[in-house]
Length: 147
Image 1 (spheres, helix red, strand yellow):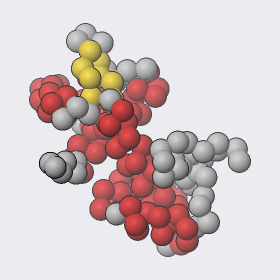
Image 2 (spheres, helix red, strand yellow):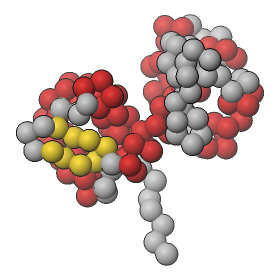
Image 3 (tube, helix red, strand yellow):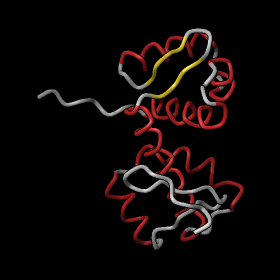
Image 4 (tube, one colour):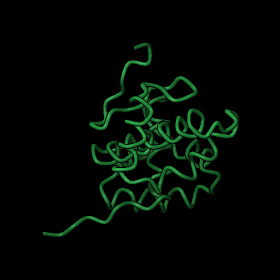
Protein backbone atom coordinates (compact mmCIF):
# COMPACT_ATOMS: atom_id res chain seq x y z
CA UNK A 1 0.00 0.00 0.00
CA UNK A 2 1.36 3.43 -0.96
CA UNK A 3 1.00 6.04 1.73
CA UNK A 4 0.17 9.54 0.51
CA UNK A 5 2.48 12.34 1.56
CA UNK A 6 0.86 15.03 3.70
CA UNK A 7 0.58 18.36 1.90
CA UNK A 8 3.11 21.05 2.79
CA UNK A 9 2.07 24.22 4.58
CA UNK A 10 2.35 26.06 1.25
CA UNK A 11 -0.07 23.65 -0.43
CA UNK A 12 -2.42 23.94 2.54
CA UNK A 13 -2.39 27.74 2.15
CA UNK A 14 -3.27 27.47 -1.54
CA UNK A 15 -6.10 25.02 -0.86
CA UNK A 16 -7.44 27.18 1.98
CA UNK A 17 -7.47 30.29 -0.22
CA UNK A 18 -9.00 28.44 -3.17
CA UNK A 19 -11.74 27.29 -0.78
CA UNK A 20 -12.40 30.85 0.38
CA UNK A 21 -12.63 32.17 -3.19
CA UNK A 22 -14.76 29.23 -4.26
CA UNK A 23 -17.17 29.82 -1.38
CA UNK A 24 -17.41 33.50 -2.22
CA UNK A 25 -17.41 33.41 -6.04
CA UNK A 26 -18.30 29.81 -6.97
CA UNK A 27 -14.87 29.29 -8.52
CA UNK A 28 -11.35 30.49 -7.71
CA UNK A 29 -10.12 32.76 -10.50
CA UNK A 30 -6.36 32.52 -10.94
CA UNK A 31 -5.87 36.30 -10.95
CA UNK A 32 -7.75 36.68 -7.64
CA UNK A 33 -5.77 33.78 -6.16
CA UNK A 34 -2.47 35.40 -7.24
CA UNK A 35 -3.52 38.65 -5.56
CA UNK A 36 -4.63 36.83 -2.40
CA UNK A 37 -1.40 34.81 -2.19
CA UNK A 38 0.78 37.78 -3.24
CA UNK A 39 2.47 35.79 -6.03
CA UNK A 40 2.76 36.09 -9.81
CA UNK A 41 0.34 34.50 -12.28
CA UNK A 42 3.22 32.27 -13.43
CA UNK A 43 3.62 30.93 -9.90
CA UNK A 44 -0.14 30.32 -9.69
CA UNK A 45 -0.12 28.45 -13.01
CA UNK A 46 2.73 26.18 -11.89
CA UNK A 47 1.17 25.56 -8.49
CA UNK A 48 -2.26 24.79 -9.96
CA UNK A 49 -0.66 22.27 -12.33
CA UNK A 50 0.99 20.62 -9.33
CA UNK A 51 -2.25 20.65 -7.32
CA UNK A 52 -4.11 19.14 -10.26
CA UNK A 53 -1.53 16.33 -10.60
CA UNK A 54 -2.11 15.55 -6.92
CA UNK A 55 -5.87 15.58 -7.58
CA UNK A 56 -6.53 18.43 -5.13
CA UNK A 57 -8.05 20.74 -7.74
CA UNK A 58 -9.69 20.70 -11.15
CA UNK A 59 -8.62 23.51 -13.47
CA UNK A 60 -11.40 24.82 -15.69
CA UNK A 61 -9.66 26.71 -18.54
CA UNK A 62 -10.75 30.36 -18.78
CA UNK A 63 -12.98 29.91 -15.73
CA UNK A 64 -10.77 29.14 -12.77
CA UNK A 65 -10.11 26.38 -10.28
CA UNK A 66 -12.37 24.21 -8.13
CA UNK A 67 -11.35 21.94 -5.30
CA UNK A 68 -11.84 18.20 -5.59
CA UNK A 69 -13.37 16.35 -2.64
CA UNK A 70 -9.86 15.61 -1.34
CA UNK A 71 -8.73 19.24 -1.78
CA UNK A 72 -11.85 20.49 -0.02
CA UNK A 73 -11.32 18.07 2.85
CA UNK A 74 -7.79 19.40 3.39
CA UNK A 75 -8.91 23.04 3.09
CA UNK A 76 -11.70 22.59 5.64
CA UNK A 77 -9.27 20.88 8.02
CA UNK A 78 -6.88 23.84 7.73
CA UNK A 79 -9.75 26.27 8.39
CA UNK A 80 -10.74 24.21 11.44
CA UNK A 81 -7.19 24.31 12.82
CA UNK A 82 -6.89 28.03 12.07
CA UNK A 83 -10.11 28.97 13.83
CA UNK A 84 -9.42 26.80 16.87
CA UNK A 85 -5.91 28.27 17.14
CA UNK A 86 -7.48 31.75 17.02
CA UNK A 87 -9.73 30.77 19.93
CA UNK A 88 -6.75 29.39 21.86
CA UNK A 89 -4.85 32.64 21.30
CA UNK A 90 -7.73 34.86 22.42
CA UNK A 91 -9.48 32.76 25.06
CA UNK A 92 -6.50 31.19 26.84
CA UNK A 93 -3.44 33.24 25.93
CA UNK A 94 -5.31 36.58 25.86
CA UNK A 95 -3.57 37.75 22.69
CA UNK A 96 -4.76 41.02 21.18
CA UNK A 97 -7.73 40.32 18.94
CA UNK A 98 -6.17 42.30 16.07
CA UNK A 99 -3.13 39.97 15.93
CA UNK A 100 -4.70 36.53 16.23
CA UNK A 101 -5.42 35.96 12.53
CA UNK A 102 -1.83 36.60 11.45
CA UNK A 103 -0.36 34.44 14.23
CA UNK A 104 -2.89 31.64 13.63
CA UNK A 105 -1.88 31.58 9.93
CA UNK A 106 1.66 30.75 11.02
CA UNK A 107 0.71 28.15 13.63
CA UNK A 108 -2.16 26.30 11.92
CA UNK A 109 0.08 24.06 9.81
CA UNK A 110 2.07 22.65 12.72
CA UNK A 111 -0.81 21.43 14.86
CA UNK A 112 -1.57 17.69 14.82
CA UNK A 113 -5.12 16.36 14.86
CA UNK A 114 -4.56 15.18 18.44
CA UNK A 115 -3.53 18.67 19.54
CA UNK A 116 -6.47 20.25 17.70
CA UNK A 117 -8.85 17.85 19.44
CA UNK A 118 -7.35 18.75 22.83
CA UNK A 119 -7.68 22.47 22.08
CA UNK A 120 -11.32 21.98 21.10
CA UNK A 121 -12.03 19.99 24.26
CA UNK A 122 -10.19 22.49 26.50
CA UNK A 123 -12.21 25.35 25.02
CA UNK A 124 -15.53 23.52 25.37
CA UNK A 125 -15.89 22.81 21.63
CA UNK A 126 -16.51 26.38 20.46
CA UNK A 127 -18.76 26.81 17.43
CA UNK A 128 -17.17 30.03 16.13
CA UNK A 129 -13.79 31.71 15.94
CA UNK A 130 -13.25 35.09 17.63
CA UNK A 131 -14.39 36.78 14.41
CA UNK A 132 -17.74 34.94 14.46
CA UNK A 133 -16.98 32.49 11.64
CA UNK A 134 -18.13 28.88 12.12
CA UNK A 135 -15.54 26.30 13.13
CA UNK A 136 -15.85 23.13 11.03
CA UNK A 137 -16.42 19.88 12.91
CA UNK A 138 -13.83 17.11 12.89
CA UNK A 139 -15.86 15.44 10.14
CA UNK A 140 -15.69 18.56 8.00
CA UNK A 141 -19.12 20.09 8.31
CA UNK A 142 -19.73 23.66 9.41
CA UNK A 143 -21.68 24.13 12.61
CA UNK A 144 -24.38 26.78 12.70
CA UNK A 145 -22.72 29.98 13.88
CA UNK A 146 -25.95 31.07 15.59
CA UNK A 147 -26.09 28.00 17.88
